[in-house]
Length: 203
Ligand code: ITT
Image (cartoon, rainbow, N blue to C red):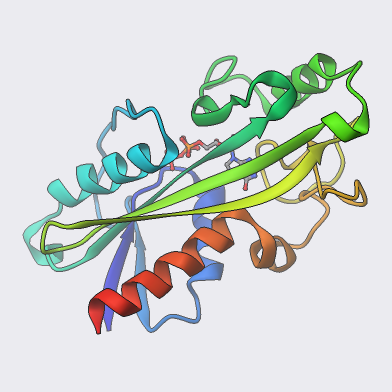
């Protein structure tokens, strides 16, 4: 059995990640549980760069007893086509890190007030990076396509989920159960791609 440390400070991500990786014969430990509390400068310009920066920063800070662990990190965000793909890699920081998602989501809806359904296309992107104990890095990407809704809908999920509708505009990802969301989400797709990659590398 191997140990995976997940380098995220986002509790909601961690809940989804645990569920997606639950079938794996591995011990999943959050950064906090590993006793690592560092500030990471996410200064990359792509999701992939930032995912690797986060994973490597935590791998470099591992205590001796966890040196053989694989460190993974997720860098994710929302690309709105009618906003030139903003907020993109800045999704967590857009309009200020501490601004509520009620306000951020309202701003996106306002920005798109004259945009017809066909042009409301958007996607959630997730890059998952893995810092391997031998010093090599792996990185994969997962995506889910959708459209920006006209109002917030649903109570599940987090962040931009209440305004992210499936392409047919039937439901938002905040109206899906966590299991339903994980089956089709950017994070689910990226983590499943990473597991495939790991199986090749570790065998
Ligand atoms: P860590 O860097 O510690 O992992 P973070 O929240 O800062 O946590 P990111 O830099 O990857 O993470 O920013 C991702 C942001 O994109 C996140 O805060 C949400 O606003 C948004 N986001 C990502 N995945 C999402 C999802 O599944 N549903 C809704 N919003 C999501």
